[in-house]
Amino acid sequence: MTALLRSELRKFFTTRLWWILLVSLAVYMGGTALLLAFAFTQRGAVGLPDGLTDDPAALVTAVYGTASSLGYVFPVVIGALAVTSEFRYQTITPTYLATPSRTRVLTAKLVSSLPLGLLYGIVGTAVSVGGGAAMLAARGHATFLTDAAVLESVARSVLALTIWIVVGVGVGALLRNQVVAIVVVLVYTQLLEPIVRTVLTSTPVGRFLPGAAGDAIVGNSVYSATGLGGLLPWWSGVLVLAGYGLLAAAVAAGTTMRRDVG
Amino acid sequence: MSTAPAPAVAGPRPRTPVRLDVVGLSKRFGAVTAVDDLSFGVEPGRVTGFLGPNGSGKTTTLRMLLGLTQPTSGTATVDGHRYAELRRPLRVVGASLEASSFHPGRTAYDHLRCFAPLSGASDARCREVLSYVGLGSAARRRVGGYSLGMRQRLALAQALLGDPQALVLDEPANGLDPEGIRWLRELLRALAAEGRTVLVSSHLLSEVQQSVDDVVVIAHGRLRHASSLAELARLSEPRVRLVTPDAAGLGALVAERGWQTTGSGERVRTAEIVGVGAREVGAAAFAAGLELFELTDVTEGLEDIFLRLVGDLPAAGAASVPPPAPGLDGSGA
Image (tube, rainbow over all chains, first blue to last red):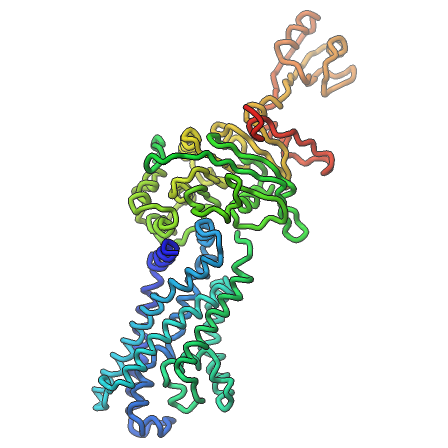
Protein backbone atom coordinates (compact mmCIF):
# COMPACT_ATOMS: atom_id res chain seq x y z
CA MET A 1 0.00 0.00 0.00
CA THR A 2 2.93 2.37 0.67
CA ALA A 3 4.09 2.12 -2.95
CA LEU A 4 0.53 2.62 -4.12
CA LEU A 5 0.12 5.74 -1.97
CA ARG A 6 3.41 7.15 -3.23
CA SER A 7 2.25 6.50 -6.76
CA GLU A 8 -1.03 8.33 -6.12
CA LEU A 9 0.69 11.34 -4.53
CA ARG A 10 3.14 11.57 -7.42
CA LYS A 11 0.24 11.57 -9.87
CA PHE A 12 -1.28 14.45 -7.95
CA PHE A 13 1.79 16.65 -7.75
CA THR A 14 3.07 16.10 -11.30
CA THR A 15 0.36 18.07 -13.08
CA ARG A 16 -0.26 21.78 -12.70
CA LEU A 17 -3.84 21.46 -11.54
CA TRP A 18 -3.04 21.14 -7.83
CA TRP A 19 -1.38 24.50 -7.46
CA ILE A 20 -3.71 26.26 -9.89
CA LEU A 21 -6.65 25.22 -7.73
CA LEU A 22 -4.72 25.97 -4.54
CA VAL A 23 -3.96 29.52 -5.71
CA SER A 24 -7.58 29.95 -6.86
CA LEU A 25 -8.82 28.75 -3.49
CA ALA A 26 -6.49 31.14 -1.67
CA VAL A 27 -7.41 34.19 -3.78
CA TYR A 28 -11.14 33.44 -3.78
CA MET A 29 -11.42 32.62 -0.09
CA GLY A 30 -9.11 35.39 1.07
CA GLY A 31 -11.10 37.92 -0.95
CA THR A 32 -14.45 36.57 0.22
CA ALA A 33 -13.38 36.66 3.88
CA LEU A 34 -12.27 40.27 3.41
CA LEU A 35 -15.62 41.22 1.92
CA LEU A 36 -17.63 39.33 4.53
CA ALA A 37 -15.67 40.93 7.35
CA PHE A 38 -16.28 44.32 5.77
CA ALA A 39 -20.01 43.68 5.28
CA PHE A 40 -20.57 42.25 8.75
CA THR A 41 -18.91 45.19 10.41
CA GLN A 42 -21.00 47.76 8.57
CA ARG A 43 -23.29 49.40 11.03
CA GLY A 44 -26.88 48.49 10.30
CA ALA A 45 -25.91 46.28 7.39
CA VAL A 46 -28.93 45.41 5.26
CA GLY A 47 -30.37 41.96 5.81
CA LEU A 48 -27.97 41.07 8.54
CA PRO A 49 -29.69 39.37 11.45
CA ASP A 50 -29.36 40.94 14.83
CA GLY A 51 -27.64 37.81 16.16
CA LEU A 52 -24.51 38.56 14.22
CA THR A 53 -24.10 42.10 15.30
CA ASP A 54 -25.05 41.18 18.85
CA ASP A 55 -22.55 38.32 19.13
CA PRO A 56 -19.11 39.43 17.96
CA ALA A 57 -17.62 35.93 18.44
CA ALA A 58 -20.24 34.34 16.16
CA LEU A 59 -19.56 37.00 13.56
CA VAL A 60 -15.84 36.31 13.67
CA THR A 61 -16.36 32.54 13.50
CA ALA A 62 -18.55 32.94 10.40
CA VAL A 63 -15.86 35.05 8.73
CA TYR A 64 -13.04 32.66 9.63
CA GLY A 65 -15.11 29.69 8.41
CA THR A 66 -15.48 31.15 4.90
CA ALA A 67 -13.33 28.43 3.29
CA SER A 68 -15.28 25.56 4.81
CA SER A 69 -18.74 27.06 4.32
CA LEU A 70 -18.27 28.56 0.84
CA GLY A 71 -15.00 27.17 -0.51
CA TYR A 72 -15.54 23.49 0.17
CA VAL A 73 -16.23 23.00 -3.52
CA PHE A 74 -12.45 23.21 -4.12
CA PRO A 75 -11.46 20.05 -2.23
CA VAL A 76 -14.53 18.28 -3.65
CA VAL A 77 -13.46 19.12 -7.20
CA ILE A 78 -9.84 18.16 -6.44
CA GLY A 79 -10.95 14.79 -5.03
CA ALA A 80 -13.25 14.12 -7.98
CA LEU A 81 -10.53 15.03 -10.50
CA ALA A 82 -8.08 12.63 -8.84
CA VAL A 83 -10.32 9.84 -10.13
CA THR A 84 -11.95 11.26 -13.25
CA SER A 85 -8.73 12.58 -14.83
CA GLU A 86 -7.46 8.99 -14.84
CA PHE A 87 -10.43 8.00 -16.96
CA ARG A 88 -10.27 11.19 -19.02
CA TYR A 89 -6.64 10.60 -20.04
CA GLN A 90 -6.83 6.79 -19.87
CA THR A 91 -4.05 6.64 -17.31
CA ILE A 92 -6.47 4.34 -15.50
CA THR A 93 -5.11 1.61 -17.82
CA PRO A 94 -1.52 1.74 -16.46
CA THR A 95 -2.98 2.28 -12.97
CA TYR A 96 -4.95 -0.97 -13.17
CA LEU A 97 -2.02 -2.75 -14.81
CA ALA A 98 0.10 -1.79 -11.81
CA THR A 99 -2.64 -2.64 -9.29
CA PRO A 100 -5.17 -5.12 -10.65
CA SER A 101 -7.32 -4.88 -7.51
CA ARG A 102 -9.62 -1.98 -8.21
CA THR A 103 -10.76 -1.78 -4.62
CA ARG A 104 -7.13 -1.26 -3.62
CA VAL A 105 -6.81 1.50 -6.21
CA LEU A 106 -9.90 3.26 -4.86
CA THR A 107 -8.77 2.77 -1.26
CA ALA A 108 -5.40 4.29 -2.12
CA LYS A 109 -7.12 7.26 -3.74
CA LEU A 110 -9.24 7.82 -0.63
CA VAL A 111 -6.30 7.53 1.77
CA SER A 112 -3.89 9.59 -0.34
CA SER A 113 -6.50 12.33 -0.67
CA LEU A 114 -6.39 13.00 3.09
CA PRO A 115 -3.01 14.81 3.18
CA LEU A 116 -4.09 16.74 0.08
CA GLY A 117 -7.37 17.71 1.75
CA LEU A 118 -5.34 18.81 4.74
CA LEU A 119 -3.18 21.00 2.52
CA TYR A 120 -6.22 22.66 0.93
CA GLY A 121 -7.87 22.90 4.33
CA ILE A 122 -4.90 24.62 5.92
CA VAL A 123 -4.36 27.07 3.06
CA GLY A 124 -8.09 27.83 2.62
CA THR A 125 -8.59 28.36 6.33
CA ALA A 126 -5.38 30.36 6.71
CA VAL A 127 -6.34 32.87 4.03
CA SER A 128 -9.89 33.13 5.42
CA VAL A 129 -8.56 33.86 8.88
CA GLY A 130 -5.82 36.13 7.54
CA GLY A 131 -8.09 38.13 5.24
CA GLY A 132 -10.94 38.23 7.73
CA ALA A 133 -8.76 39.22 10.71
CA ALA A 134 -7.00 41.93 8.71
CA MET A 135 -10.31 43.51 7.73
CA LEU A 136 -11.80 43.15 11.21
CA ALA A 137 -8.73 44.78 12.74
CA ALA A 138 -8.83 47.56 10.16
CA ARG A 139 -12.49 48.20 11.02
CA GLY A 140 -11.67 48.32 14.70
CA HIS A 141 -13.46 45.07 15.46
CA ALA A 142 -12.12 42.45 17.82
CA THR A 143 -10.35 39.60 15.98
CA PHE A 144 -10.76 36.94 18.72
CA LEU A 145 -7.49 35.35 17.51
CA THR A 146 -6.64 34.24 21.03
CA ASP A 147 -10.14 33.02 21.88
CA ALA A 148 -10.05 29.24 22.43
CA ALA A 149 -13.54 28.61 21.04
CA VAL A 150 -12.83 30.60 17.89
CA LEU A 151 -9.50 28.86 17.35
CA GLU A 152 -11.18 25.49 17.81
CA SER A 153 -13.68 26.28 15.10
CA VAL A 154 -10.79 27.37 12.89
CA ALA A 155 -9.13 23.99 13.43
CA ARG A 156 -12.41 22.24 12.66
CA SER A 157 -12.63 24.24 9.42
CA VAL A 158 -9.40 22.52 8.36
CA LEU A 159 -10.91 19.18 9.37
CA ALA A 160 -14.10 19.84 7.37
CA LEU A 161 -12.17 20.72 4.23
CA THR A 162 -10.07 17.58 4.63
CA ILE A 163 -13.16 15.41 4.78
CA TRP A 164 -14.70 17.19 1.80
CA ILE A 165 -11.93 15.85 -0.45
CA VAL A 166 -12.98 12.31 0.49
CA VAL A 167 -16.50 13.15 -0.68
CA GLY A 168 -14.96 14.35 -3.94
CA VAL A 169 -13.06 11.08 -4.47
CA GLY A 170 -16.27 9.11 -3.86
CA VAL A 171 -18.27 11.24 -6.31
CA GLY A 172 -15.50 11.02 -8.93
CA ALA A 173 -15.32 7.24 -8.65
CA LEU A 174 -19.08 7.00 -8.94
CA LEU A 175 -19.37 9.22 -12.01
CA ARG A 176 -16.03 8.52 -13.77
CA ASN A 177 -16.79 11.16 -16.42
CA GLN A 178 -14.85 14.34 -15.68
CA VAL A 179 -17.25 16.87 -17.18
CA VAL A 180 -20.28 15.20 -15.62
CA ALA A 181 -18.56 15.06 -12.22
CA ILE A 182 -17.59 18.73 -12.25
CA VAL A 183 -21.05 19.84 -13.42
CA VAL A 184 -22.76 17.69 -10.78
CA VAL A 185 -20.48 18.99 -8.03
CA LEU A 186 -20.93 22.63 -9.04
CA VAL A 187 -24.70 22.42 -9.57
CA TYR A 188 -25.21 20.58 -6.31
CA THR A 189 -22.96 22.67 -4.09
CA GLN A 190 -23.66 26.07 -5.60
CA LEU A 191 -27.32 25.77 -6.51
CA LEU A 192 -29.18 22.71 -5.30
CA GLU A 193 -28.07 22.38 -1.70
CA PRO A 194 -28.46 26.09 -0.84
CA ILE A 195 -32.04 25.96 -2.14
CA VAL A 196 -32.86 22.66 -0.47
CA ARG A 197 -31.35 23.83 2.82
CA THR A 198 -33.46 26.96 2.71
CA VAL A 199 -36.59 24.92 2.00
CA LEU A 200 -35.85 22.29 4.64
CA THR A 201 -34.69 24.80 7.20
CA SER A 202 -37.50 23.97 9.62
CA THR A 203 -37.04 20.17 9.40
CA PRO A 204 -34.26 18.04 10.91
CA VAL A 205 -33.63 16.45 7.49
CA GLY A 206 -31.82 19.54 6.29
CA ARG A 207 -29.13 19.03 8.93
CA PHE A 208 -28.08 15.78 7.28
CA LEU A 209 -27.34 17.31 3.90
CA PRO A 210 -23.61 17.25 3.05
CA GLY A 211 -23.19 21.00 3.19
CA ALA A 212 -25.00 21.22 6.51
CA ALA A 213 -22.85 18.41 7.89
CA GLY A 214 -19.74 20.29 6.75
CA ASP A 215 -20.95 23.42 8.51
CA ALA A 216 -21.72 21.40 11.60
CA ILE A 217 -18.06 20.36 11.82
CA VAL A 218 -17.04 24.00 12.04
CA GLY A 219 -19.95 24.75 14.34
CA ASN A 220 -20.95 27.95 12.68
CA SER A 221 -21.23 29.34 9.20
CA VAL A 222 -22.65 32.02 7.03
CA TYR A 223 -25.80 29.94 6.61
CA SER A 224 -26.43 29.20 10.25
CA ALA A 225 -25.26 32.64 11.29
CA THR A 226 -27.88 34.09 8.99
CA GLY A 227 -30.45 31.93 10.68
CA LEU A 228 -30.84 29.15 8.13
CA GLY A 229 -31.49 26.08 10.21
CA GLY A 230 -29.75 24.39 13.11
CA LEU A 231 -26.72 22.17 12.87
CA LEU A 232 -25.72 18.73 14.11
CA PRO A 233 -23.09 18.38 16.84
CA TRP A 234 -19.67 18.75 15.23
CA TRP A 235 -18.61 15.10 15.61
CA SER A 236 -21.90 13.99 14.01
CA GLY A 237 -21.07 16.30 11.16
CA VAL A 238 -17.74 14.49 10.75
CA LEU A 239 -19.49 11.13 10.65
CA VAL A 240 -22.25 12.24 8.27
CA LEU A 241 -19.89 13.96 5.83
CA ALA A 242 -17.30 11.17 5.85
CA GLY A 243 -20.23 8.76 5.50
CA TYR A 244 -21.31 10.45 2.26
CA GLY A 245 -17.81 10.07 0.82
CA LEU A 246 -17.37 6.46 1.91
CA LEU A 247 -20.88 5.51 0.78
CA ALA A 248 -20.24 6.94 -2.69
CA ALA A 249 -16.87 5.14 -2.81
CA ALA A 250 -18.42 1.84 -1.67
CA VAL A 251 -21.16 2.05 -4.31
CA ALA A 252 -18.50 2.93 -6.92
CA ALA A 253 -16.33 -0.02 -5.85
CA GLY A 254 -19.28 -2.33 -6.46
CA THR A 255 -20.40 -0.77 -9.73
CA THR A 256 -18.51 1.77 -11.87
CA MET A 257 -15.02 0.74 -10.79
CA ARG A 258 -15.71 -2.86 -11.77
CA ARG A 259 -16.44 -2.06 -15.38
CA ASP A 260 -14.09 -2.96 -18.20
CA VAL A 261 -11.80 -0.13 -19.20
CA GLY A 262 -10.72 0.72 -22.71
CA MET B 1 17.18 8.60 -32.13
CA SER B 2 18.10 5.11 -33.22
CA THR B 3 20.61 3.45 -30.99
CA ALA B 4 21.69 -0.12 -30.84
CA PRO B 5 19.57 -1.64 -28.09
CA ALA B 6 21.59 -2.24 -24.97
CA PRO B 7 20.35 -4.90 -22.59
CA ALA B 8 17.16 -3.64 -20.94
CA VAL B 9 18.09 -5.41 -17.75
CA ALA B 10 18.82 -3.07 -14.86
CA GLY B 11 21.13 -5.57 -13.23
CA PRO B 12 21.75 -9.27 -13.15
CA ARG B 13 18.61 -10.98 -11.93
CA PRO B 14 17.72 -14.62 -12.22
CA ARG B 15 15.12 -15.01 -14.91
CA THR B 16 12.34 -17.53 -14.98
CA PRO B 17 10.83 -17.96 -18.41
CA VAL B 18 7.19 -16.90 -18.56
CA ARG B 19 4.61 -18.45 -20.85
CA LEU B 20 1.41 -16.75 -21.88
CA ASP B 21 -1.60 -18.97 -22.46
CA VAL B 22 -4.97 -18.18 -23.90
CA VAL B 23 -7.47 -21.02 -23.56
CA GLY B 24 -11.01 -20.99 -24.95
CA LEU B 25 -11.17 -17.24 -24.50
CA SER B 26 -14.39 -15.49 -25.51
CA LYS B 27 -15.75 -11.99 -25.06
CA ARG B 28 -19.18 -10.80 -26.04
CA PHE B 29 -20.23 -7.15 -25.99
CA GLY B 30 -24.00 -7.40 -26.14
CA ALA B 31 -24.82 -9.15 -29.39
CA VAL B 32 -21.30 -8.74 -30.77
CA THR B 33 -18.79 -11.51 -30.24
CA ALA B 34 -15.43 -9.78 -30.23
CA VAL B 35 -13.37 -12.84 -29.32
CA ASP B 36 -14.65 -16.32 -30.01
CA ASP B 37 -13.20 -19.40 -28.33
CA LEU B 38 -9.63 -18.34 -28.91
CA SER B 39 -6.71 -20.52 -27.83
CA PHE B 40 -3.00 -20.05 -28.36
CA GLY B 41 0.26 -20.04 -26.45
CA VAL B 42 3.20 -17.65 -26.42
CA GLU B 43 6.67 -19.04 -25.80
CA PRO B 44 9.50 -17.39 -23.88
CA GLY B 45 12.61 -16.34 -25.76
CA ARG B 46 10.65 -15.74 -28.94
CA VAL B 47 8.86 -12.84 -30.55
CA THR B 48 5.28 -13.77 -31.33
CA GLY B 49 3.32 -11.67 -33.79
CA PHE B 50 -0.38 -11.42 -32.93
CA LEU B 51 -1.88 -10.58 -36.27
CA GLY B 52 -5.28 -9.74 -37.60
CA PRO B 53 -7.16 -6.96 -39.37
CA ASN B 54 -8.43 -3.96 -37.41
CA GLY B 55 -11.41 -4.98 -35.32
CA SER B 56 -10.49 -8.66 -35.30
CA GLY B 57 -10.32 -8.80 -31.50
CA LYS B 58 -6.58 -8.39 -30.89
CA THR B 59 -6.82 -5.55 -28.42
CA THR B 60 -9.75 -7.14 -26.60
CA THR B 61 -7.72 -10.34 -26.25
CA LEU B 62 -4.72 -8.46 -24.89
CA ARG B 63 -6.93 -6.51 -22.47
CA MET B 64 -8.36 -9.78 -21.17
CA LEU B 65 -4.85 -11.18 -20.78
CA LEU B 66 -3.97 -8.10 -18.73
CA GLY B 67 -7.05 -8.22 -16.51
CA LEU B 68 -8.53 -4.97 -17.83
CA THR B 69 -11.51 -6.66 -19.43
CA GLN B 70 -13.40 -9.60 -17.97
CA PRO B 71 -13.67 -12.56 -20.34
CA THR B 72 -17.16 -13.90 -20.99
CA SER B 73 -15.60 -17.35 -20.84
CA GLY B 74 -12.20 -19.01 -21.03
CA THR B 75 -8.93 -18.00 -19.43
CA ALA B 76 -5.84 -16.01 -20.25
CA THR B 77 -2.86 -16.64 -18.00
CA VAL B 78 0.66 -15.43 -17.37
CA ASP B 79 2.87 -18.27 -16.20
CA GLY B 80 -0.28 -20.15 -15.23
CA HIS B 81 -1.75 -17.29 -13.20
CA ARG B 82 -4.47 -14.85 -14.02
CA TYR B 83 -3.05 -11.33 -14.24
CA ALA B 84 -5.03 -10.21 -11.18
CA GLU B 85 -3.28 -12.92 -9.14
CA LEU B 86 0.21 -11.61 -9.89
CA ARG B 87 1.73 -10.11 -6.77
CA ARG B 88 3.87 -7.50 -8.50
CA PRO B 89 2.49 -7.51 -12.01
CA LEU B 90 4.75 -4.79 -13.43
CA ARG B 91 7.79 -6.92 -12.58
CA VAL B 92 6.35 -9.83 -14.56
CA VAL B 93 4.53 -8.30 -17.52
CA GLY B 94 5.22 -4.98 -19.19
CA ALA B 95 2.45 -3.78 -21.45
CA SER B 96 1.80 -0.94 -23.82
CA LEU B 97 -1.78 -0.84 -24.97
CA GLU B 98 -2.40 2.47 -26.65
CA ALA B 99 -0.14 5.39 -27.21
CA SER B 100 -2.59 7.74 -25.50
CA SER B 101 -2.58 6.66 -21.85
CA PHE B 102 -0.76 9.76 -20.72
CA HIS B 103 -1.78 12.95 -19.00
CA PRO B 104 -0.80 15.65 -21.52
CA GLY B 105 0.37 17.98 -18.75
CA ARG B 106 2.86 15.51 -17.30
CA THR B 107 6.42 15.14 -18.50
CA ALA B 108 7.58 11.74 -19.69
CA TYR B 109 9.91 11.50 -16.70
CA ASP B 110 7.13 12.35 -14.26
CA HIS B 111 4.78 9.91 -15.96
CA LEU B 112 7.22 7.09 -15.36
CA ARG B 113 7.88 8.28 -11.81
CA CYS B 114 4.16 7.97 -11.08
CA PHE B 115 4.36 4.25 -11.75
CA ALA B 116 7.92 3.70 -10.55
CA PRO B 117 7.00 2.88 -6.92
CA LEU B 118 4.85 -0.01 -8.15
CA SER B 119 7.50 -1.20 -10.62
CA GLY B 120 10.24 -1.29 -8.03
CA ALA B 121 12.02 1.30 -10.18
CA SER B 122 14.21 4.15 -8.98
CA ASP B 123 14.35 7.62 -10.50
CA ALA B 124 17.60 6.55 -12.17
CA ARG B 125 15.79 3.61 -13.75
CA CYS B 126 13.15 6.01 -15.12
CA ARG B 127 15.89 8.05 -16.79
CA GLU B 128 17.60 4.88 -17.99
CA VAL B 129 14.55 3.49 -19.83
CA LEU B 130 13.80 6.91 -21.32
CA SER B 131 17.29 7.09 -22.85
CA TYR B 132 16.94 3.46 -23.89
CA VAL B 133 13.88 4.27 -26.02
CA GLY B 134 15.52 7.41 -27.38
CA LEU B 135 13.57 9.95 -25.30
CA GLY B 136 16.48 11.02 -23.10
CA SER B 137 16.50 14.59 -24.38
CA ALA B 138 12.69 14.92 -24.36
CA ALA B 139 12.22 13.43 -20.89
CA ARG B 140 11.39 16.76 -19.22
CA ARG B 141 8.93 17.88 -21.88
CA ARG B 142 5.19 17.57 -21.39
CA VAL B 143 3.70 14.61 -23.20
CA GLY B 144 0.99 16.84 -24.70
CA GLY B 145 3.60 18.08 -27.19
CA TYR B 146 4.78 14.61 -28.17
CA SER B 147 4.34 13.12 -31.64
CA LEU B 148 2.63 9.75 -32.00
CA GLY B 149 6.02 8.10 -32.52
CA MET B 150 7.34 9.64 -29.30
CA ARG B 151 4.28 8.45 -27.41
CA GLN B 152 4.90 4.94 -28.72
CA ARG B 153 8.45 5.14 -27.41
CA LEU B 154 7.19 6.38 -24.05
CA ALA B 155 4.65 3.54 -23.92
CA LEU B 156 7.55 1.14 -24.53
CA ALA B 157 9.61 2.80 -21.82
CA GLN B 158 6.73 2.33 -19.44
CA ALA B 159 6.43 -1.34 -20.38
CA LEU B 160 10.15 -1.84 -19.72
CA LEU B 161 10.18 0.11 -16.45
CA GLY B 162 9.74 -2.87 -14.12
CA ASP B 163 12.27 -4.95 -16.09
CA PRO B 164 9.53 -7.52 -16.79
CA GLN B 165 10.05 -11.03 -18.10
CA ALA B 166 7.16 -10.75 -20.57
CA LEU B 167 6.16 -7.90 -22.86
CA VAL B 168 2.73 -7.39 -24.35
CA LEU B 169 2.74 -4.64 -26.94
CA ASP B 170 -0.36 -3.59 -28.86
CA GLU B 171 0.48 -2.14 -32.29
CA PRO B 172 3.81 -0.68 -31.11
CA ALA B 173 4.83 0.19 -34.67
CA ASN B 174 1.88 2.57 -35.19
CA GLY B 175 3.14 6.07 -35.74
CA LEU B 176 6.79 5.08 -35.95
CA ASP B 177 8.77 6.26 -38.96
CA PRO B 178 10.73 3.69 -41.00
CA GLU B 179 13.80 4.31 -38.87
CA GLY B 180 11.68 3.84 -35.75
CA ILE B 181 10.23 0.58 -37.07
CA ARG B 182 13.73 -0.70 -37.69
CA TRP B 183 14.74 0.35 -34.19
CA LEU B 184 11.67 -1.42 -32.77
CA ARG B 185 12.55 -4.59 -34.68
CA GLU B 186 16.04 -4.65 -33.16
CA LEU B 187 14.59 -3.94 -29.75
CA LEU B 188 12.13 -6.82 -29.96
CA ARG B 189 14.86 -9.18 -31.16
CA ALA B 190 17.13 -8.09 -28.32
CA LEU B 191 14.41 -8.59 -25.71
CA ALA B 192 13.64 -12.09 -26.94
CA ALA B 193 17.37 -12.89 -27.07
CA GLU B 194 17.47 -12.10 -23.35
CA GLY B 195 14.94 -14.88 -22.82
CA ARG B 196 11.92 -12.66 -22.51
CA THR B 197 8.50 -13.47 -23.86
CA VAL B 198 7.43 -10.91 -26.44
CA LEU B 199 3.89 -10.70 -27.77
CA VAL B 200 3.41 -7.94 -30.31
CA SER B 201 0.20 -7.23 -32.19
CA SER B 202 -0.11 -5.72 -35.62
CA HIS B 203 -2.64 -5.49 -38.41
CA LEU B 204 0.16 -5.81 -40.94
CA LEU B 205 2.33 -8.88 -41.22
CA SER B 206 4.89 -6.95 -43.26
CA GLU B 207 5.38 -4.57 -40.34
CA VAL B 208 6.60 -7.31 -38.03
CA GLN B 209 7.63 -10.19 -40.27
CA GLN B 210 11.30 -9.36 -39.89
CA SER B 211 11.14 -9.50 -36.12
CA VAL B 212 8.76 -12.33 -35.28
CA ASP B 213 9.55 -16.00 -34.76
CA ASP B 214 5.96 -17.14 -34.35
CA VAL B 215 2.66 -15.91 -35.67
CA VAL B 216 -0.85 -16.11 -34.30
CA VAL B 217 -3.38 -14.98 -36.89
CA ILE B 218 -6.95 -14.12 -35.95
CA ALA B 219 -9.94 -12.74 -37.80
CA HIS B 220 -13.42 -12.01 -36.49
CA GLY B 221 -12.23 -13.00 -33.04
CA ARG B 222 -11.30 -16.52 -34.13
CA LEU B 223 -7.99 -18.25 -34.54
CA ARG B 224 -7.09 -18.66 -38.21
CA HIS B 225 -3.52 -19.82 -37.87
CA ALA B 226 -0.78 -20.34 -35.31
CA SER B 227 2.70 -21.52 -36.16
CA SER B 228 6.26 -20.41 -36.57
CA LEU B 229 6.85 -17.86 -39.29
CA ALA B 230 8.71 -20.52 -41.30
CA GLU B 231 5.69 -22.80 -41.19
CA LEU B 232 3.50 -19.96 -42.33
CA ALA B 233 5.77 -19.42 -45.33
CA ARG B 234 5.40 -23.07 -46.21
CA LEU B 235 1.66 -22.56 -46.67
CA SER B 236 2.45 -20.76 -49.86
CA GLU B 237 1.98 -22.80 -53.05
CA PRO B 238 4.23 -22.27 -56.05
CA ARG B 239 2.34 -20.61 -58.86
CA VAL B 240 3.51 -19.75 -62.36
CA ARG B 241 1.93 -17.45 -64.92
CA LEU B 242 2.47 -18.48 -68.49
CA VAL B 243 1.58 -16.70 -71.75
CA THR B 244 1.82 -18.47 -75.10
CA PRO B 245 0.52 -17.83 -78.64
CA ASP B 246 -0.30 -21.54 -78.91
CA ALA B 247 -3.46 -22.21 -76.92
CA ALA B 248 -3.84 -25.74 -78.23
CA GLY B 249 -0.25 -26.64 -77.42
CA LEU B 250 -0.71 -25.27 -73.90
CA GLY B 251 -3.87 -27.31 -73.43
CA ALA B 252 -2.10 -30.45 -74.54
CA LEU B 253 0.86 -29.85 -72.27
CA VAL B 254 -1.32 -29.12 -69.24
CA ALA B 255 -3.33 -32.27 -69.90
CA GLU B 256 -0.22 -34.36 -70.38
CA ARG B 257 1.42 -33.17 -67.17
CA GLY B 258 -1.78 -33.18 -65.19
CA TRP B 259 -1.20 -29.62 -63.98
CA GLN B 260 -3.76 -27.61 -62.12
CA THR B 261 -4.54 -24.35 -63.86
CA THR B 262 -6.78 -21.47 -63.13
CA GLY B 263 -7.67 -20.93 -66.79
CA SER B 264 -9.23 -23.56 -69.02
CA GLY B 265 -10.58 -24.07 -72.54
CA GLU B 266 -9.01 -24.26 -75.93
CA ARG B 267 -8.65 -20.56 -76.56
CA VAL B 268 -6.78 -19.79 -73.39
CA ARG B 269 -3.36 -18.41 -74.02
CA THR B 270 -2.65 -17.23 -70.51
CA ALA B 271 -2.71 -19.67 -67.64
CA GLU B 272 -1.71 -19.76 -64.03
CA ILE B 273 -0.34 -23.10 -63.06
CA VAL B 274 -0.57 -24.02 -59.42
CA GLY B 275 1.72 -26.36 -57.54
CA VAL B 276 4.77 -26.35 -59.80
CA GLY B 277 7.68 -23.97 -60.07
CA ALA B 278 8.70 -21.82 -63.04
CA ARG B 279 11.74 -24.01 -63.67
CA GLU B 280 9.71 -27.16 -64.14
CA VAL B 281 7.10 -25.46 -66.31
CA GLY B 282 9.82 -23.89 -68.48
CA ALA B 283 11.58 -27.22 -68.96
CA ALA B 284 8.33 -28.98 -69.88
CA ALA B 285 7.39 -26.27 -72.37
CA PHE B 286 10.83 -26.45 -73.94
CA ALA B 287 10.60 -30.24 -74.20
CA ALA B 288 7.15 -29.98 -75.79
CA GLY B 289 8.32 -27.28 -78.20
CA LEU B 290 5.75 -24.82 -76.85
CA GLU B 291 6.56 -21.22 -77.63
CA LEU B 292 6.34 -18.92 -74.61
CA PHE B 293 5.91 -15.14 -74.48
CA GLU B 294 6.08 -15.00 -70.73
CA LEU B 295 6.86 -17.27 -67.81
CA THR B 296 6.54 -15.59 -64.41
CA ASP B 297 6.86 -16.93 -60.89
CA VAL B 298 3.80 -15.55 -59.08
CA THR B 299 4.21 -17.63 -55.95
CA GLU B 300 2.25 -16.21 -52.99
CA GLY B 301 4.26 -14.04 -50.60
CA LEU B 302 3.80 -14.00 -46.83
CA GLU B 303 1.47 -11.03 -47.04
CA ASP B 304 -0.72 -12.89 -49.55
CA ILE B 305 -0.89 -15.89 -47.26
CA PHE B 306 -1.80 -13.62 -44.38
CA LEU B 307 -4.53 -11.91 -46.38
CA ARG B 308 -5.86 -15.28 -47.51
CA LEU B 309 -5.92 -16.48 -43.88
CA VAL B 310 -7.80 -13.45 -42.60
CA GLY B 311 -10.05 -13.16 -45.65
CA ASP B 312 -13.74 -13.72 -45.22
CA LEU B 313 -14.52 -17.37 -45.14
CA PRO B 314 -17.74 -18.69 -46.67
CA ALA B 315 -19.33 -19.79 -43.42
CA ALA B 316 -18.33 -19.99 -39.81
CA GLY B 317 -18.36 -23.81 -39.84
CA ALA B 318 -16.26 -23.98 -42.99
CA ALA B 319 -13.30 -22.21 -41.40
CA SER B 320 -10.40 -24.58 -41.60
CA VAL B 321 -8.12 -23.85 -38.73
CA PRO B 322 -4.76 -25.54 -38.96
CA PRO B 323 -3.78 -27.13 -35.67
CA PRO B 324 -1.23 -25.18 -33.66
CA ALA B 325 2.20 -26.01 -34.89
CA PRO B 326 5.00 -27.37 -32.76
CA GLY B 327 6.71 -24.61 -30.86
CA LEU B 328 3.45 -22.85 -30.11
CA ASP B 329 1.65 -25.56 -28.21
CA GLY B 330 4.74 -26.62 -26.37
CA SER B 331 4.84 -30.08 -27.96
CA GLY B 332 8.18 -29.66 -29.64
CA ALA B 333 10.60 -27.57 -31.70
